[in-house]
Image 1 (spheres, one colour):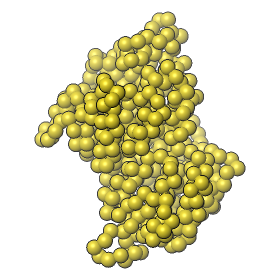
Image 2 (cartoon, helix red, strand yellow):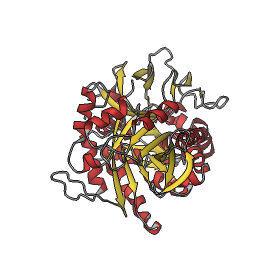
Image 3 (spheres, rainbow over the protein chains, first blue to last red):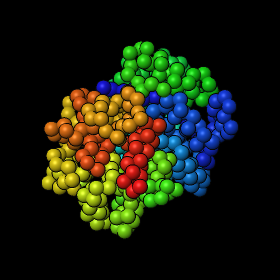
Length: 255
Length: 212
């Protein structure tokens, strides 16, 4: 049985959730623990915290946040953003994160993937790939880094395949063409990567409604779907997402 | 143990992975849960937990290095409630396809095999526990019982007499085993939300009954 996961993604700055989450009756919309508990109660399968803290000397706040979340919330969570070294990964995993996702630093130095995988296991090593369509790349998609700003000239499918070989346990695949557009996942990209690899792929970027989540699994062949704004701004609950997916014939863990 | 004290659960800390969630999970489940490599504390505990993440060989190496392999064997043989989780379950067996030639603890006979078939590995998802035995591990839980799995290998079915639950992942995959005082879960109860906390509480209750 293949069970699709629904994963809300929260942006975190200096240990606080930003981009406002409008749950009714929530006391503190910036508190990662309260929000994580709320998403757990709604039936979220996992959580991703994306650390957008600009200054590296405030990264300790992210470690403290991981610990606080792990103290209170008993579903898996991933922390990504700004992880440059094995030691960065170690501190977050020791603090209670289940997985770390690496992006720019792994493109720059792919051995980082192997190092994390060897020390902690493939299961906690997520490689995040930001891709943009590019006619010059063999697969039609090129890897971008630094939050999608920097071209690398690296082919997306080649890098995803290499990441798996190096020991990644999962790929978090974001279409930069679709991110923020609310037009739905880049399904060609998602299905190409998911069907080529033997490890799970999380689809990300572009979700604007619940049907997009269904498409990500049915047409995109994604193992998990990630979304931010449709959940945060109260447009839909995770429970509604799962109901829609189940009605479409996708197996999900009910909320 | 007196009526006012919580069961003491020793979580074997042999330097592998993230034990924070396991400790907090057992605390939520009503235990006085300690991460420890102290033999005296382990021997005094009402229940002993062997966690594990990553790979079989590094876990066995770390258990050997810390001497906790003997502590785990003794605890499992003591009759006190004992629980292996994830790779901490796999090392209870005789050996694993992941690390040919490296013996496991041998507390449970038979081996650990790659999950077969055209499925993605690791299985990284929630899945339903299909009950095969009526066992206190799953007390108080209504079907379907959903648990969170992250693994590429699983124990062999054997004759099935100790298999508490399987999950369906390209076929039946052993999800939970129990033989006497030894419980083992391939899934992560400490990451399985309310269901997982209930499973941990069931273990704490068993430890409390024994202590009481």
